Image (tube, rainbow, N blue to C red; front, side):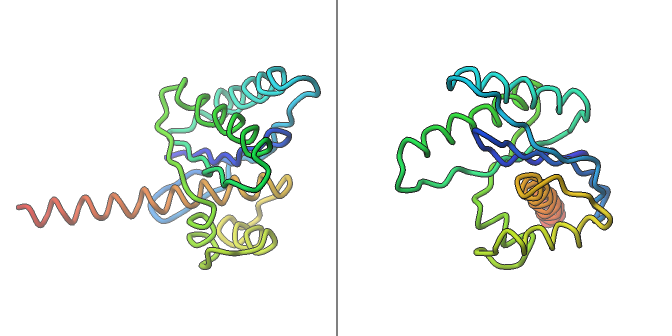
Amino acid sequence: MRVLGIDPGLRNMGWGVIDVSGARLTHVANGICHSEPGDLAERLLSLHRDLTEVLRRFAPDAAAVENTFVNKDAVATLKLGQARGIALLVPAQAGIKVGEYAPNAVKKTVVGVGHAAKAQIDHMVRIHLPGVQINGPDAADALAIAICHAHHVQSSGRLEAALARAAR
């Protein structure tokens, strides 16, 4: 299974692609979609265009997006939510199911604690994906989101198998 992780942002939208085979995770690619200067609509359009190209190039089977947290600046939260809408829309347009994860759930899955620092996330992504060259903190976060999704899909698959065995 190929998983695309997306870290939504209006200026910088991180993305990371991994392959999952059993318990083995392999890095495929990562990067950052930078929105073009201009009004909000133009910035969203450029993110849509760039993320669509990522999907075309890497053909993921699944996608995962980090949930937006609400902060004190309502305008910034709303703009981030609009960028997150692009992150959800692009995979959905390609017929790909999208998982959504809270930031603390991603950190807990990848690092082991829910309030990990950016440096800890970067470090653990490098441990999960040996030899990876990460294209910035947003790309590291996106790879962490992909890793989180892979672990949750594997766990739910094991649970479904156990429930099926118990029902027999």
